[in-house]
Length: 206
Picture 1 (spheres, rainbow, N blue to C red):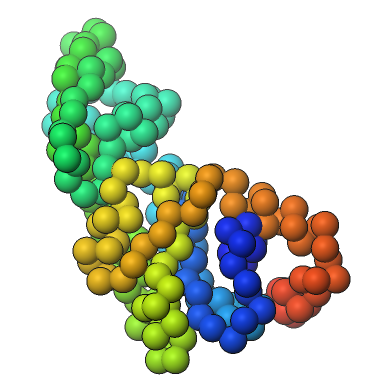
Picture 2: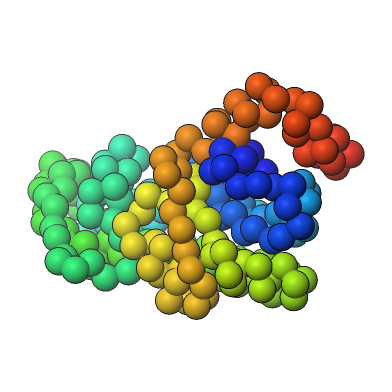
């Protein structure tokens, strides 16, 4: 809900909006209408899980141990969810697991896409499941308006293309997706009376 407000959606309207927030530890998928969440799906897949997938890929395929920061750098540098117009490569340094000495290898964007594929497919399946659970009237609104991606994971290159191909829905990446939740929370704190319905609904959930 904070992401939706941060993006600038009019959450009071009697129309359906779907927001997919891909954070560090989890991905949250919600259909929002009339200041409430109609359905919500949460999966334990996010940026951290993608980093671990890259680390495991290097161990399995190259017997190379890399750290979390290196995996994050690779993901941001050459990671993608769908083929790039021009595939790229990157030099990666790590420790050889066989002889224990430092080693440098060249890795391609295709290989990193393969490493990330399971995590991305899990997110795609969760979005599809959420769409299946959405009432028909709201589903038609989402078809017209598209799905909004927020959170740091939305910055993964071509994730919008992958979701568009797999769901046949329009996908919109929010402006500055990293700060959507913070901006939404700020708006609620600035105008608590305007978002009273949102606050009360979420209090009742606790």
